[in-house]
Length: 126
Image (tube, rainbow, N blue to C red; front, top):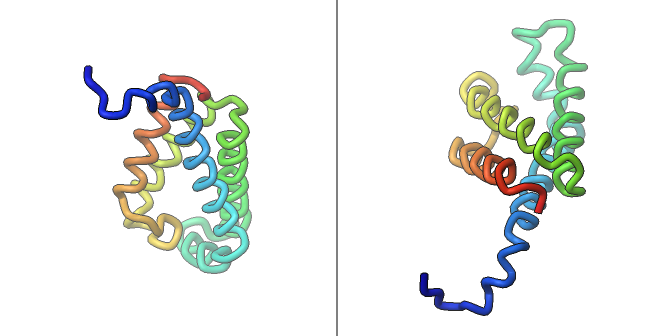
Protein backbone atom coordinates (compact mmCIF):
# COMPACT_ATOMS: atom_id res chain seq x y z
CA UNK A 1 0.00 0.00 0.00
CA UNK A 2 1.25 3.46 -0.81
CA UNK A 3 1.97 5.75 2.09
CA UNK A 4 2.13 9.52 1.91
CA UNK A 5 4.82 9.60 4.61
CA UNK A 6 6.71 6.29 4.36
CA UNK A 7 9.41 7.45 6.76
CA UNK A 8 6.82 7.58 9.57
CA UNK A 9 6.08 3.87 9.27
CA UNK A 10 9.10 3.05 11.42
CA UNK A 11 7.36 4.83 14.30
CA UNK A 12 4.41 2.41 14.13
CA UNK A 13 5.86 0.49 17.04
CA UNK A 14 4.99 3.43 19.30
CA UNK A 15 1.27 3.38 18.44
CA UNK A 16 0.25 0.85 21.14
CA UNK A 17 2.38 2.76 23.65
CA UNK A 18 0.57 6.02 22.90
CA UNK A 19 -2.84 4.33 23.08
CA UNK A 20 -1.96 2.58 26.35
CA UNK A 21 -0.62 5.79 27.86
CA UNK A 22 -3.63 7.90 26.92
CA UNK A 23 -6.22 5.42 28.23
CA UNK A 24 -4.17 4.88 31.39
CA UNK A 25 -4.00 8.60 32.11
CA UNK A 26 -7.75 8.85 31.49
CA UNK A 27 -8.55 6.06 33.98
CA UNK A 28 -6.17 7.45 36.60
CA UNK A 29 -7.56 10.98 36.29
CA UNK A 30 -11.15 9.74 36.43
CA UNK A 31 -10.45 7.74 39.60
CA UNK A 32 -8.66 10.71 41.16
CA UNK A 33 -11.58 13.00 40.27
CA UNK A 34 -14.07 10.55 41.79
CA UNK A 35 -12.14 10.49 45.09
CA UNK A 36 -11.12 14.14 45.43
CA UNK A 37 -13.76 16.23 43.70
CA UNK A 38 -16.98 14.27 43.34
CA UNK A 39 -17.07 11.84 46.25
CA UNK A 40 -20.04 13.39 48.06
CA UNK A 41 -22.11 13.74 44.89
CA UNK A 42 -21.44 10.12 43.97
CA UNK A 43 -22.24 8.90 47.48
CA UNK A 44 -25.62 10.67 47.29
CA UNK A 45 -26.21 9.20 43.85
CA UNK A 46 -25.38 5.65 44.96
CA UNK A 47 -27.15 5.98 48.34
CA UNK A 48 -30.56 5.32 46.77
CA UNK A 49 -29.61 1.81 45.71
CA UNK A 50 -26.65 0.91 47.96
CA UNK A 51 -27.64 2.51 51.25
CA UNK A 52 -24.95 1.56 53.75
CA UNK A 53 -22.12 0.72 51.39
CA UNK A 54 -22.38 3.79 49.16
CA UNK A 55 -19.40 5.62 50.67
CA UNK A 56 -16.94 2.68 50.60
CA UNK A 57 -18.24 1.65 47.18
CA UNK A 58 -17.31 5.01 45.66
CA UNK A 59 -13.83 4.87 47.18
CA UNK A 60 -13.25 1.25 46.09
CA UNK A 61 -14.37 1.91 42.52
CA UNK A 62 -12.19 5.03 42.33
CA UNK A 63 -9.17 3.14 43.66
CA UNK A 64 -9.75 0.37 41.11
CA UNK A 65 -9.87 3.03 38.37
CA UNK A 66 -6.60 4.53 39.58
CA UNK A 67 -4.85 1.14 39.83
CA UNK A 68 -6.11 0.26 36.36
CA UNK A 69 -4.76 3.56 35.02
CA UNK A 70 -1.38 3.09 36.70
CA UNK A 71 -1.14 -0.45 35.37
CA UNK A 72 -1.77 0.77 31.83
CA UNK A 73 0.66 3.68 32.14
CA UNK A 74 3.39 1.43 33.55
CA UNK A 75 2.67 -1.37 31.08
CA UNK A 76 2.27 -3.86 33.94
CA UNK A 77 -0.06 -6.75 33.08
CA UNK A 78 -1.38 -4.74 30.15
CA UNK A 79 -3.60 -7.41 28.66
CA UNK A 80 -5.28 -8.12 32.00
CA UNK A 81 -5.69 -4.38 32.57
CA UNK A 82 -7.16 -4.11 29.06
CA UNK A 83 -9.76 -6.77 29.86
CA UNK A 84 -10.67 -5.06 33.14
CA UNK A 85 -10.78 -1.69 31.40
CA UNK A 86 -13.10 -3.06 28.72
CA UNK A 87 -15.43 -4.34 31.44
CA UNK A 88 -15.23 -0.94 33.11
CA UNK A 89 -15.99 0.87 29.83
CA UNK A 90 -19.05 -1.32 29.29
CA UNK A 91 -20.17 -0.61 32.86
CA UNK A 92 -19.79 3.12 32.25
CA UNK A 93 -21.91 2.78 29.12
CA UNK A 94 -24.56 1.03 31.18
CA UNK A 95 -24.30 3.53 34.08
CA UNK A 96 -24.70 6.55 31.78
CA UNK A 97 -28.46 6.80 32.34
CA UNK A 98 -28.63 5.40 35.88
CA UNK A 99 -25.80 7.39 37.49
CA UNK A 100 -25.12 10.49 35.36
CA UNK A 101 -22.51 11.95 37.75
CA UNK A 102 -20.49 8.74 37.72
CA UNK A 103 -20.38 8.49 33.92
CA UNK A 104 -20.10 12.15 32.94
CA UNK A 105 -18.63 11.72 29.48
CA UNK A 106 -20.40 10.96 26.24
CA UNK A 107 -21.16 7.37 25.24
CA UNK A 108 -18.86 7.75 22.25
CA UNK A 109 -15.85 8.15 24.55
CA UNK A 110 -16.62 4.90 26.34
CA UNK A 111 -16.99 3.09 23.02
CA UNK A 112 -13.65 4.50 21.83
CA UNK A 113 -11.98 3.45 25.10
CA UNK A 114 -13.44 -0.04 24.67
CA UNK A 115 -12.07 -0.29 21.12
CA UNK A 116 -8.62 1.01 22.14
CA UNK A 117 -8.45 -1.53 24.95
CA UNK A 118 -9.60 -4.29 22.61
CA UNK A 119 -6.78 -3.31 20.29
CA UNK A 120 -4.30 -3.42 23.19
CA UNK A 121 -5.59 -6.84 24.17
CA UNK A 122 -4.76 -8.21 20.72
CA UNK A 123 -1.56 -6.29 19.99
CA UNK A 124 0.08 -6.56 23.40
CA UNK A 125 1.71 -4.09 25.74
CA UNK A 126 3.37 -1.65 23.36
